[in-house]
Length: 205
Image 1 (cartoon, rainbow, N blue to C red):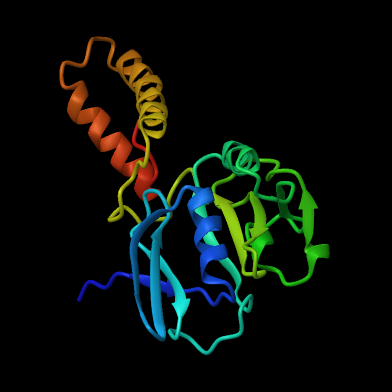
Image 2: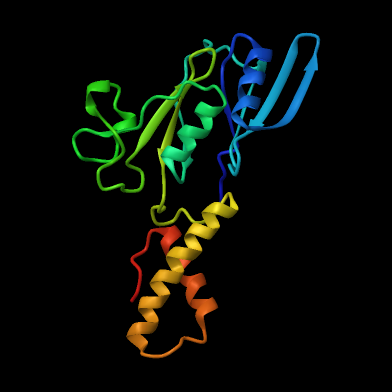
């Protein structure tokens, strides 16, 4: 049975303040419904299949009690710059001081080292920010998905798709050099290469 994680509840103290903040981030508002003692607002991060909801009368959790909701981004520096340009206080980029990939998930900040992952590995570079209530968000750079993660949309912008096409073009050039001739079936080759890259599989020569 296929299951999708649809919604995460974010506890906030001031609903309208939170609404302004997530609008500023560029999240898309899907719902703002209210009755006398109830209000629910749903926002969707760009390209995400999972939404967040907050409001009045929907949770008893303490406002600001969420420690790290993760936003996967294709370019940590570009994402950080975009949020900074919108007035969001984002941390400097950091990585796992021990050389692993889980630096964003250690509770102890001493386990973090400044700057992006030295090898710029997928899943290895992070930055963080908080909403007005103190709910913590984590940006995680993901350039190549682990196997089995290709069901979700692979690209969320024309820039990401163009970058993937350039990588496929470069790889295809090497492929043609090995063939010693022009590959007339290049569209199928591009498609297979891009799917394998997104799923994290090893690329064939």
